[in-house]
Every structure is written in C-alpha cells, then in structure tokens.
Picture 1 (cartoon, helix red, strand yellow):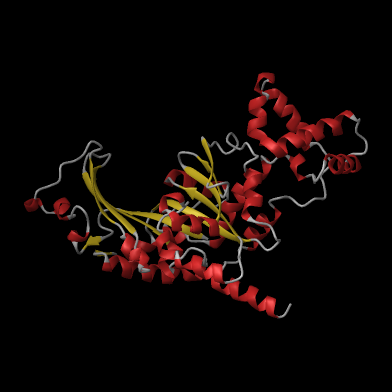
Picture 2: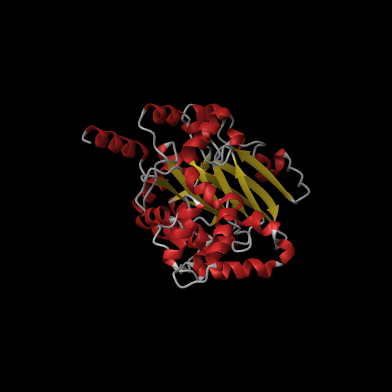
Length: 390
C-alpha cells in the first residue's frame, strides 16, 4: 500500500495552536512583536517538530512537521506546513502490517488527533484534500517458496537498469541485504525487512528506513516465533511532478491529493509498472537453469534444437559470466568493443526460445497482483497453526 507520505499544506489550511512546540518557535513567523526571523540564504525560515528517540522507544509515534515561511513566485510571503509520516506506523506502530482502502477514515481521524496533540489544528477536509509532495508505495512480500530476500537481491545486483530507469546511482549495501536504484526524483528499493530491523538494533543509520526504534520490539517477537522471510519493495516518488508523471503512465489522470493517492489499485499499478521495467532489463539467459555447464548446455540445446553449435557455446560462456559478475561489470569489461556489441548479444538472448523455468520475479508479480495486505502477527499465527496440523 503506502508507507511514508509527505503532505504539504498552504496558508489557510492549518492553524498553529502551540507555537512553542516547534524549534524555533513558530510565533516569530506570525507575530511581529516577537521579532521576525531573518530569512536565510534560500529565502526561507523553517521551524521543526519531530518525534524524539525517547518517544519512539516508548511506542509513541508522531509525524515530522516542518513549518516554512518563504517568498513565493509572486514575491509574497507564504507559510506552509509539511507533514511527513509513515501511515502504518501511525496506525499499527509498525510497517510490517499493511492497510487497505477501508482504513482511510481511521487514518484521517488518527492523524487529526495526533496533530492536535502536537499543537496543530486542521479540518478533516483539509487533510483529505491535502496535496501530496512525496509518496512511498510499498509491499511486503512474504516468501513462502523457501527462498530468502537475498535470492532476489543477488539477481537484482546482476542487472544494469540505470539507463532504462534513468537512475544515476545504485547501492548494494548491508552485506547484500538492501538494493536501491536512485535518481533525483525517485528511488526503487528492495530490502530484507527482517534484516533491516536487525541492522536498526545496531544503529539507526545502518537501516534503510527512519524511526525503526518504534518497532524494535518486533524483532524479539520474530526471533521467538517461526522465522518469517519478508522481501520489501518500495517505490519512492519524491517529487510532485514525478508522482503526476507516473500516475499518467498507469492510466490515472488525477491530482496527487491524499484521498486520491491512498488507493490499493494505484499502489499495485505503480509497483507493477516498475517490476515490468526491471523484468525488461533482466537478461533472458538468466532464466535458464544453471547448476553446471553440462546441465545448462543440454537444457539450452533441448529448448533451441535448430541452432548451430556456436550459439549454445557462446550462450554458455555468457551465462557463466553474467551469473558471476552481472551485466554492469560485463559491459564495463567489454566496453572497448562498443555498446553495439552488448545490444547485439541482448537481441540474440531475446530471440531465444523461452524456457519453461519460472521467472525469478514471478512470485513478486503474483503477490503484488493479489495485493493481499500482510498482517505480521496474523501471518505468524497461521504458520504456527499449520505446523500443529502438518
């Protein structure tokens, strides 16, 4: 569904009830008698209110609030409120459990109550229609086929999708338990959800997400129960223009407001859009089973019986290299042959007979298509009950 979302409200959509809850106090933005704050180098002033580490450890979750006074394009002063929060953490205290469309009224009521405790008042209508400036669509994939998140993460590391997704940085971190394609306006992130929680116990900076202190107790619950493997997929659209662009690509010509963005169907289509982009960049040759050169060679000949001997020999050598070093390193090693050499090989791979082996992404696509919300404790209890009767 959605994890983190950023709502940006304009002047008139909110009221600050307690200025001193912000640092520095927002009083100076409104009250001339207290002395206005001097505008900084970017012609704006920011006042923040964030959850404290102590609150998170106590299970108290709050949004991150930023009140900004700036000079707008019309050269007038304007004051905006940015609300950044994880929706499942707000409702459940963790982001293992996922929400559905039916939870939206509960989210609005809970958010309104928490914001009032933080000294900010908003009408429900303002929250429902709040403009969205960033959204992280996500899905927790429970791996039920005896694979682990590393199975998928190691395959992603073999790809070279920087050009296809127009990314400018790739991270493979935490000993291979997190993988990220990053651009200026969006990120595509895959990571081991359980391992990320384990990393957060060591240091919040080593984890993939913020405010993990809130759910560190879950790690103890998980280690006492039957182990659960969870691969988390996140599509982080970090600019309003990017959100609008992706919505149009998936056939949703809507304004990015909170009510319109909070949609299981939209989340599913955004995730499937990026999964398709990644699948297109996955060399088809990697779908051929490879336990040994002999097994690959015999399987390739069976699937492509009308080819000359040189093709299976060439593809065997390519498969061995791609399996060991991936596309990026292979292209780097062979760059003196020119980019046309890789495109020629890639075309030969795409013209091959499709293997009957299931795609490495088939389980991901299947679970995203079903889009059944994962409930952590319910899932664990079901696995325990299955063990009793097996």
